[in-house]
Length: 357
Ligand code: GDP
Image (cartoon, rainbow, N blue to C red; front, side, top):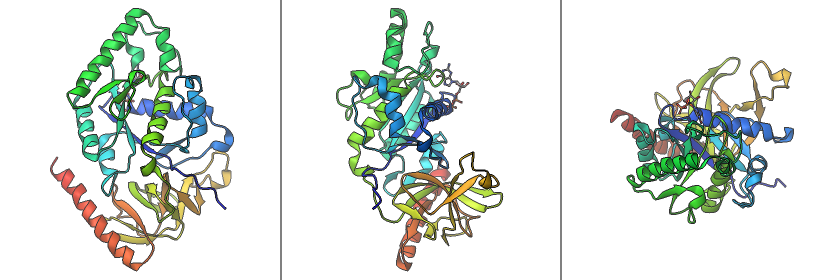
């Protein structure tokens, strides 16, 4: 019997103002995770990065007396592309595909136009978030301590620097209050359901990454058990990108947020000229580098994949598929019609959202 995990991995998105460090932070999280991974733990995704619990535990190990968490989630799935446009399109019926968001704010600049826009979207989609107060290494006088927990590095800073940091965090608290959110530095929060956690980090030095991962994992596991319950039914997903891959043809990169996707499943997905119904020919994942036989396409084929995951799907008739469209696996004819209607409804909302901009 396959021992399926009780909870699936939460889907994490990163958003915030341009140049505040979203890409750098994601790269740092990925890089830190790679270093701590054992060979057997390697899984590669399409359009997303999976950080397994074993790795989160290792990274957060120095904090175990301060943030005691016993993780039951299998890990965290980070969507690789930052930005609120992508996030707006990651919609599922009645909400967002994202379970939690990291709102990246340059601590030296505070809230900017796209920070507010991001908050609007988070409010609208009711996605919980924490604030990564990024670029703490740019605080004048900050002494960097590569990859250390923020709380340890803070101890090594001068009183002047500590005070400056507090002032900058207080600015963020006020800006969040103007958006009707109670917020505080994470280590001063008792009730995480009432306060938005502010985690000081540096995407450059890696300081604060241990806390960021520990808090994301701890919060999602503690407060989202219902949403993260693993479902064995037909897969549901959303299309990130439509591509033409050499040697494979037209494919779609998809985030599967629910159920299990199988080879030969019938999928229903939105297209430029109407809804597309087709059969999954291949579920593709990046091939491990050492596997030379697959080097031509760079992908390996798997028979099935459980949520949450980022996968590439090859199937006939995908050339007109639409990025942002929902994707459903239909188990029979009547489901095909039902999903066609659902997708048409969803897509009309996306087009409407674009038109009013
Ligand atoms: P994005 O537009 O939000 O994805 O921002 P980027 O990740 O591209 O970062 C914008 C600029 O800020 C780049 O020059 C980064 O090197 C720099 N940057 C990002 N994070 C940090 C940080 O923590 N500290 C410092 N000093 N620079 C950073």
